Image (tube, rainbow, N blue to C red):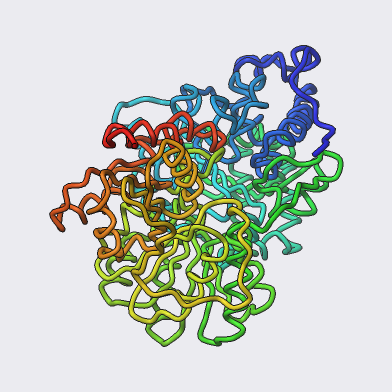
Length: 634
């Protein structure tokens, strides 16, 4: 797809941004150079990310804030924690990594999130929401214990305040430290439009006329901040404003002094305010109003799309569209099933766009529920639906479902509630990296009593599995499916109801038994072809079910094979292949098992084909493991 993007060049090296190799260089700039720097950063982000993809909208919204933070504080001595940290690109650019921004999310390039091993300025890595305040409070406590004087600043979006850990941290700040700075970056969006009471509260504040008047007064007041009299006046104005429009005094109930709201794109005001706050001897929260996607009209028009996306055309923000992804097929199928069955409900945790439940939301809004960034609550909410005879589909990325693990065991499985767990991004998530790879869900679900777990090999089987889930009433049932597209298998007009625990034997052989899980079928077929070219007879089984396994079928073909080889888009440790080893051990079948999957480590970011080649998820590696178990073919 053609774009108008540019790459790093000599012109960059001679720009203001190109001269910044660390925060000290930023501090040397004259104040009147900062607005130009902000525009350079935005232009660089827009052009670079058009080639690599990434979190464009969030970063365009925090340009001035990040400049102000590095202008006022002294990283790495002072600590900046960005909740989720997908908005950390600007921070990376101001800490010596601007020349590498065109490598972001690329193999061996910059990570798309903050990473402690990448820079001393990344004091805390992240990738999930709701972590910044708790971690920052821990750092404040450690600093106080060590009698040090550095500052700790936590930056969290308004959506993070719907997240349980954030509220838990707020509950502890005032009792733990006297010096902590929290910045509430209020833009009304997380990945999608924020929901819930707190979101409505912040939104109401932004639209309140008295609130807007106080914002203007606050900006003028901060310009005059100097000395005791100014601080008394600020406190007086602030208190009066709260009495008018903040009757609940939300943050002061938690023991934080509230400042703001101020314009998060007004650099002089931001800098002066932060200079004031760093002198306070009490926990403070600064409320700033920012615009997600600022400076790029396509991102302003479609903030959900430009939260995080692949390559795009700079001119109009358009992206390539191809065959439907598994997520898109999921959204369409569950919506269609719900039109046939009024008991079906759809639940997500702040990700209607990512899970594609936006289709359900549009067509059946009364049975669609978004809990905000609250996976634990979403899981319990689904349990409540199940107890009342509804058929809830709970759609959460595999990497985020980890947060609801206790609820899956304690509430769903223990009570045998028929909640349908739909785990998007089951498997490698490529350029998103280790925080987002869904490589652990088989391990954390396969030992849960009574839980059914499955993975489809293609699009048609995916719809059959979703239909089977829709009609399953005997307890919790889960499906994992990958990011992106399948192999392109046509979908039947009517879905088929599958038999729980029954595998599909695609080919019978006598020398080797290949058992690929899900979309690893393509890799297994490659391996089969190469084995057959060498004269070997191959069995190919599509297991379908991670739990319960089709023990009878797998045992039958394992017995008559010289070797079994499993393939999975999951870590080998406690994965699908291990369940086959356990099965054969229990059946006293001595056929050796070789496994293809991800190693016992956190896999880096990069294109899936590059990572698979590096870590041995290839037919060549499979052959290397299989052939030593075979006699020469006749």
